[in-house]
Image 1 (cartoon, rainbow, N blue to C red):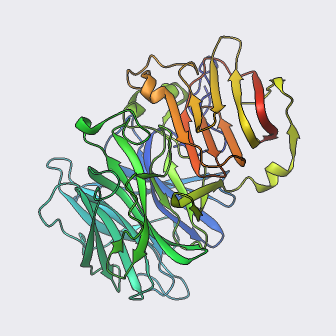
Image 2: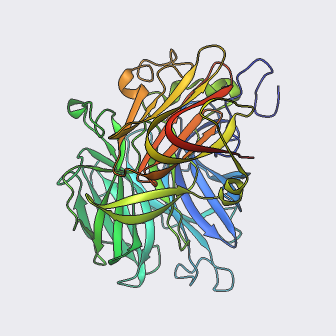
Length: 470
């Protein structure tokens, strides 16, 4: 058995370049912030069992977004409760007074959740070495106003008021608060989910500006718990947990949905990307999500490898204008040098010698890419005239959970907007990420092959190049 608890007989599902906990359970990304050349990444963490439990904040850092160094647990539960999701800011001007201008503090804003009665309030902690955190004695900084589901604060710089703002989930809407010192917060506005797009219980919001050809726009991301009575079979409502976004303006007090898309705008069309949020203190907008699904995450067979829970690769975003309006387009960050060392795959069968790799695909028409092994497992990625389809129904283990085994979870579809485009595919042990249609159609799905895939079969009007990831 190695340090991760993986025996010689267990399947090796631990990804090589995707974030996983050192052991046991993780879920939502938290506190993502870029400081002094390092990407700090916190996450919901239960260090004592491979299933959800009283939450801590795990902590890891990276300089390239591919190779991560685990640090000691960042924030522990206290008398106000366990540590639910939140964010970090690099307080460069020391508005909080927790550090100095020469040594600015990192300030974490998070939800304190009492397990006994579900009371949720917002608290802060700070660090001047960016590793060890002290709780603020004045917590909670935003007491609960008397409602359920009051959580997941995402702090950001407010350029209108030149202060910090945050957006947090509050039942069927999100609320905005502003502060000059990160300690004293005043409510400034609300945004109701579901006027356009999906309604339900809001979670893990994020709000940030993006430059476009028409000037600056703002994006509001909201992860949603969709009511069971509204579950359907379309792109948007086949699961209880999905992540949508809106495009509009931020007036300094609240977000305004200026685009008013009737159909939901999706961060991902796959089953396994939830609670996605961005790095703070980073000029470009880079997003990471939890690459699992609440329907089956607690039953994932990765527990035999010593962990449960993983994150998507970091994805850089741009906001592009399409014939259907503004849409986010994504590209994988950190793979630039690896893509340069690529080789062409032939049509038909190609031998596969690794379980972590990438594919660059020029899409000129219709076609398919299939990963296969000798025990009959296969993932089928199909490009049709109108759609991109990822079929994992025969990808490997699925008996561990009834929801994972359902066809509506096994077949992932995304609309195709472009006749000719680029697609990037990354496979890493147990997670498949497809950024299709020049990044407009992301599909993320976890799979659990009974044996490593041994060949890639290419057919149709697809020019496929292979590159190693290490």
